[in-house]
Length: 238
Length: 238
DNA sequence: CGCTACTTTGATATTTTTCAATCTTGGTGG
DNA sequence: CCACCAAGATTGAAAAATATCAAAGTAGCG
Image (cartoon, rainbow over the protein chains, first blue to last red):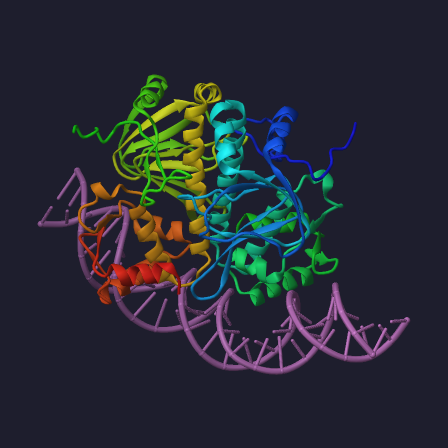
């Protein structure tokens, strides 16, 4: 069977009722994808490219086809909090009151589809099936966010990092992962901003997990899981 | 004009594009409400009633019409993490892989509508407008969850409590609030579970805010805001 | 009016943050 | 091709904050 291009416009999520393995699956039919592509602009951006800034008027909704994007907010104190990391099949740029809530920036070279928000909403209002797919996707994101909230409740850095790793891996199709390696395109500082920890705490946490034989790094942007069972237990609770 | 009954089935959220004040508004038309009511079961439950348990098969989706519900998860360590508090106009019970993710329990006497999930999804798939309203609501919840994630990143207890108070107030129609009092139907322990703090830390945080003249309690389940400006600043960042 | 559950308060211990310095890595230019 | 530079990452020591354990105080409810 032909492998789909990795930069195609697709949306992935775990449906409400799927009896599968719980892994996110592509939601759109090929007809729906074509419909979206026909009204979308395909962007090829380099690392560091800012797609939109917080509090600016929201004119587009974005779909990440390939690469990685961070959605973050600059706090008055100057610290950065990362709201989400986005990968292939993820939607971002959902506005509130007509403005973006966060800033979105590519962290590696990425392929992004930009959809005018008014065109998309018109499409959604007249195509219940497409609308339902979007509902599935947003619901999926909401559940992920709640999972993360639960995880953020814990105080221990290693536990938070463990759950972060599993969360990143869950967002990637298992078929595309190399063995048990988890890609970490973002910086330690981004991870810290995502987990609500200092970057030193993140470093110490990963360091101790490596020393314990749970993880091994292949450079700074890829981790191999050596002891899956222990990592799962650590992420589950403490 | 006739005031709508407080136990009517309604869904409230901030739309994508509204140029309003940012406060959530009822989304459904009266025809849509009637349609939902016709397939819903109205439940009148007492405090402590469990609506569903985590990991059980999800057959219904719920809408809170009046009262207050907590959605939580029991962790292996025995601690409870609160995923959400739900009030009038809120949806809950969105399943993943056909099962509930959390446990839902009423914290005060409440009026809840129960909708069979298969009937609702069928309705959504054939009615794009209704579907779009649900998309708005879930998107609203996602943004709230992200806001909370940002807030959970901070380490100081008073800041977390401040943002919790504002978050609770935001969920209530401003018209129904008595002056600047915020209702807190949940226990301190629930708040702690929501914020990822020990209940002692919550108690100390509220205590210090009272001593500073920022808040005043009318009993344990209602706070008045005495210094709005300072509370906002505390909640915004530190 | 008294019980029970919840809440507040107190003292110690654990953890992370912070501030600072050192070390790596990836990229650049000689 | 190698050395250097700069940004990011790691490691170290001290300080701040919350967690934890324990006890006393309140409030609501029968």
